[in-house]
Amino acid sequence: MSKIPRRILSLCLAPLGALLVNPPASAQAPTPIKVSYQIAYWALPIYIATEKNWWAEAGLKPEFVVYPAGAQQIAGAASKSWDVGGTGSPPAVLGAQRYGIVTLGITNDESTANGVMARKDNAAAVRSNAAKEVKGKQILLSPNSTGEYATMACLKKWGMQRSDVSVVTLAPAQLVSAFIGGNGMLAGTWAPNFYTLNEQSGAEVVCSGKDAGVMIPGALVARGEFAKQNPEAVAKFLAVYLRAVSFEKSNKAEAMGYLRKLFDANGIKLNDGYLEQELARPIFTLEEQLKLMSRTGGKSSLDQAYESLSAYLKGVGTLTEVPDPATYITDDYMKRVDQAPALKAFANNAN
Image (cartoon, rainbow, N blue to C red; front, side):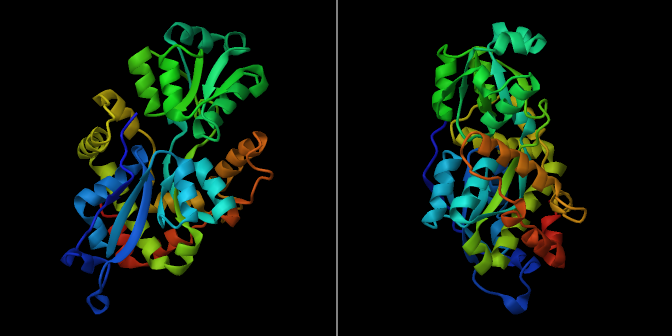
């Protein structure tokens, strides 16, 4: 869908604004940090922070590493190609098992942005009687993806399971091309593929993850080794990301302009209606992150979402066991932000 650069370098000089986070007594050169992401809505805070030069204010000098999908991104952790970033929840789980990646928080709730699309001529029939219309039909899916996860939840809602449909597995870009080319009655995918398929083939979402009752969190992540060795840098990364979230919530029109610039620069052309759908996804401030991750009453809301996701991954044979979320999801770094007055003020600054 887009031509994505392999690596984007951003060299930022720390201005006087860095004194907000770094007191004069500790004035020092900005800390290098490698930030990984994909071209997706949840990368908007990273883009805004770069446009606003907030990295330098936080005392960080980022190097951006952009990946086309989660599989390549997570594999990059093995070679230490990145330190922190954002990714999808399936890559976060698999990365924890294979490379010791830790989940620090949530980028956004993607429940409405993942699901099943049907061709325009079939959509109404699928909505009215999915069990009859879908059973035995061909569905295009990208394996180990949030789109596949949402699709399996939709099948369950419709009283079916994977064996009741004919699954064709394709990489995301190939899935879009194949569906537009006339292959499959259904496609399990996510935004912005939703918009491309709608615009070019008239396809409609007939069931989302939210419709099927599953929460699909995007993940803020770090390499475990880097996080242990550089806790302050990780906390500053989170503070920068959260400041951009605060900005988005308070400046919708300006945020929409930045999202358009981010997508346009990478070959993704969306009209205002689609951009508004992207911006309607739930995103979370520092306080909201801490609530989602709180284990005060037992398992956190985020723990439960990841357990459900891991059960799906086990069901398709990607995992052998459902891992304990407490072994790879930590709120330690969010708490570092919350417990440092200057950093907390920075994270909550909506300007």
